[in-house]
Length: 313
Image (cartoon, rainbow, N blue to C red; front, top):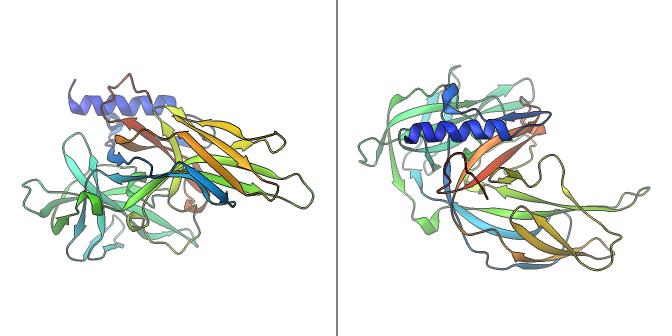
């Protein structure tokens, strides 16, 4: 099977397996959209236990980095389809992505208004066909929805245009790190019982997130492992009436959680996320497609050598 047909088949699988009210699945390259896969390296965790975490904190965090990334060595601007300017400063970070034809480097940028208060997002991908340290091709990766990180880009028509953009590789250890995290939520309303929950999230690095002045969900999204959705529309609830610690299974991870009377939580993760090379892609979005502030992204995290038709955690 060719690389192009393999990526198309993988995209079709995502479209089949990711469903739900309000969700929009990523489209495969067979429909005219290329499938963007981002190779990442998941690092071993430095610690597997936490103490006294308040609501909004992480009960577990494990770093990941793009397999490769580059920085632009000069500022660069280009127009989008409507003539609005997409600007990238000197030093802007672009993450490696894989498409059927070649490796490319992509980043998101805010490029204009959707309605009165919200901004739309658009991505830009570059390629260097002769590998001389200067990008010689560029393509817009338009999105009508939230795309604050390169990992969230949903390409439309893939049209390459000439470019001349110098860049420099980033050493692997200097590539900005994101995190796979178990985040903790606790609320104690005056006239209701306290509630606590966790979710398995994947969060892009700040340095690789498009700047915005609007309120959004930030640079974190829900994580799928293979095609098993660990937390899609709902978080995993913690039973505050249960005696003693609780063991929760989130995808491939197992963690023991304790919540005290004040709502502070601690956790021990005996089974962290498997380290190594993975392929990350936007599988779907949930919420209002044209409202970045009311939308969350759902990422699929696949084994680097997963054969189409047999994708498993």
